[in-house]
Length: 326
Image 1 (cartoon, rainbow, N blue to C red):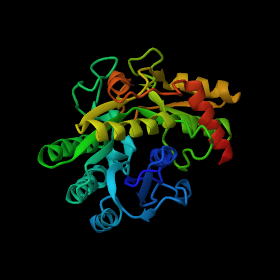
Image 2: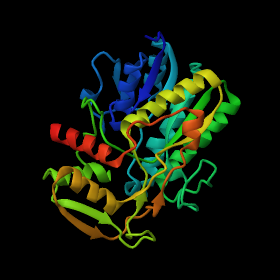
Image 3: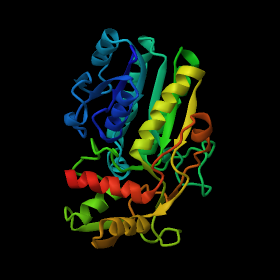
């Protein structure tokens, strides 16, 4: 077991809790800070030090960093609903950007050398190529994406001025649940397609709304790259190992380089669950690009990331098994 700690903000949330478990499984000691606005205390093992509070609470962060020997911060805590960010942009900038600034400042002042940031494919905006590599222009089309890109800029500038290195992981669409069934996506008002579709298959929803069927894609619905949450958690461990060893910065996509349309995903959920359910076409939502598919060459080469669950049916099956447990 490592003697040093990794501070995980938002560690009671969906991706944060899976990464907290992955750290424990790897013999690394996590500390979790979460305000429980969307996370669940039950998602964090009782053996893990837990502090309820905001990721921008400098007094709380400073006291934790003084008490524990923290070698890295993994920052998940953020608001994540694209459409909501267009309605409440200042709320998103406050929670995602201002809080991150406070957290980075605390890390610098407490001499923490490694910072891993939960970024997003939303920083790219409307894709100019079918597969997005990390050198694709960043031109976000919604406040959510802008709030994430601002944090990347802050980290870039901080790393030039102070002895801190960072990895910004740009996720694509995260789905699934812990393969061992320990945790999954528990939020009641989830906006993730696979979560919504498995709820419809289990009769927890009346059906699935498809937002826009007039996009320039084969079936008119948006195409996304779906990555299993377990593989995403492993990418954070790979990023931590990279920062420890290379002591240099990294911006990296985390996705499978494969895209599925909304209607294709719904068909897989129907097939895996054996249940038909209603599908309703609604008008487009603001801020939704037509296609987001990752190039993952950098992750596989530089992080030596080798995903285990690169299969949409497996992702859906794990999500379905967790939803049945709930």
